Length: 311
Image 1: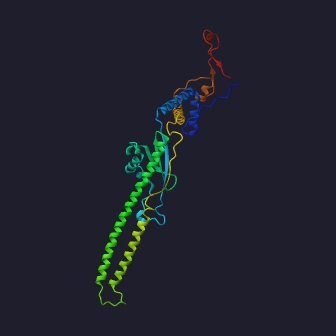
Image 2 (image 1 turned 180 degrees about the horizontal axis):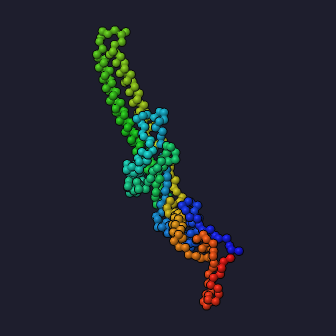
Image 3 (image 1 turned 45 degrees about the horizontal axis):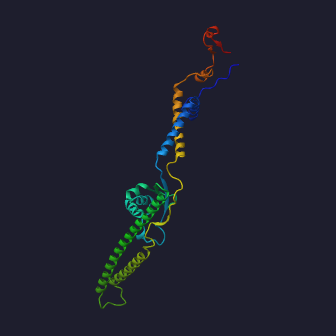
């Protein structure tokens, strides 16, 4: 009884057909797939050992809620996290951090070692530092966090001082206006009357009282709300290096090698249709087997029947 023909790998652009053709090519050229995967993994592993050892440590900056009750308007700094990320990575913060680290560390080196990103929490910024040693990574991250806090505090203090200066100038002008209005009041005015000048004097006095209260509030609360940072979570020295990661890199290399190998195997399978078994023609042309040409070798090839009929 003739064996049931093996169906050829389906053709077409649908994912199922492509998957079946890829599996067929991988089985046919398994040695090529294995070789390319091994070479890719070995190359990635070799490159891993050429990388310098680097450690990474991260500290989190918890930002102050600028809309909180009691925070003076003049002391509020924009807590737009995208803007504050730029401040963390600024030259000014890097310079302050380099001064803290000492050891001939330049601001440019600090900027090259540090990255900042918005944390998972809505009011947090993560500062990550890279260094050749675990302690160096943690120290760099903490130094940048402290420098950022100092810079934002100085900015807030400057804004408060500018606001107080403006309020004091307005206060001086208001006092002068009160004296001017009082001097214009007639001496023989009716004490029970309510002239326009007297109403202006009372309004100016209320304004002066309001200015005094605002100046006092800013002066008192400047130290409490003078920074955009509410708290800092210190960085911990990492236990393992961030690079090299030979096992991870070898795995990624193997995956990339596998993808490339499957592509090459599929390409070769599409262009080479050699027949390796009596069922191969059925799979290639999709037609019944009509006969088999035996190969007896040597002179025996002429003695036997040339064609063995199928069925």
